[in-house]
Length: 317
Image 1 (tube, rainbow, N blue to C red):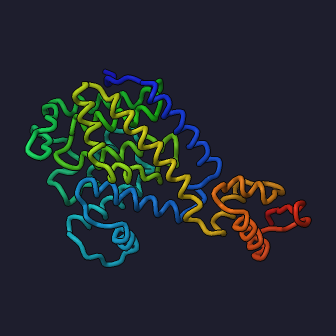
Image 2 (image 1 turned 180 degrees about the horizontal axis):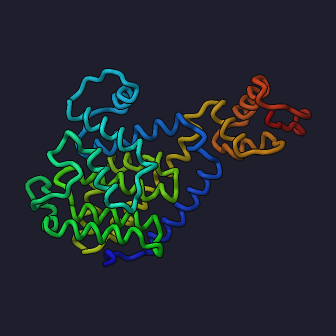
Image 3 (image 1 turned 120 degrees about the vertical axis):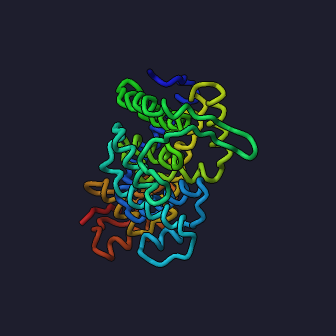
């Protein structure tokens, strides 16, 4: 049966905002054309998602591990990061509607960390916050059937992907199908659901916003539990996605050098263009920076220049 939730006016407003920002990112090919930014965001995604679960490694240490350098830290934390590298490298081949792939992802994430990775729990569990029981998960005998129903829902083409990703995330946390690793696999699977329609989500580290204010994340889960539907959590996660896209759009020029900017811009441009068009594309840069970028492009024989002063135009060589 379909999980219970409502589409509120707040959710619709956030979906509209997210759609506009996705269009802007795609139009400017910010992620696809910038491998450095993609690498940084993937590292930030892994660090943030694991930090929520208590992992102590920093972005710098995770970067060193990715580069096969020696890192001093708890063996468990290092193993969690190495496992995450493996599964995040397979995001493009994992099928978001496949329960088998879902179990495979849990196996990859939790291998060497739990006794039965990739297997649903065979005992009852509860989530304790402080001295109180925050959530009692459904009986373990119901887990398999509940997860099958959830994957049937994922195949429903009548619902928006943005909504389905949030609903799956909440419902999976509610079912709590594994003894450990539910949080990290839930966030991973939301990313996978989103990136099948919007590839940029492979490199959008929305987990960092959750990590920075974990109490809000757990509060949204708890309030949805109390209400008996995922409406509040949907609004919360859509807000997180919206803010993450804001950060990506702001990040794009702060961390790009002139070669990066020219590469991204020329990937979208055919024919001649002016400095004004270049500045409209990168709204955050000054006129002096734009002039310097374009001069460097000419000096490096990336661009040809025509005309003088106000009539100056450029063309990709």
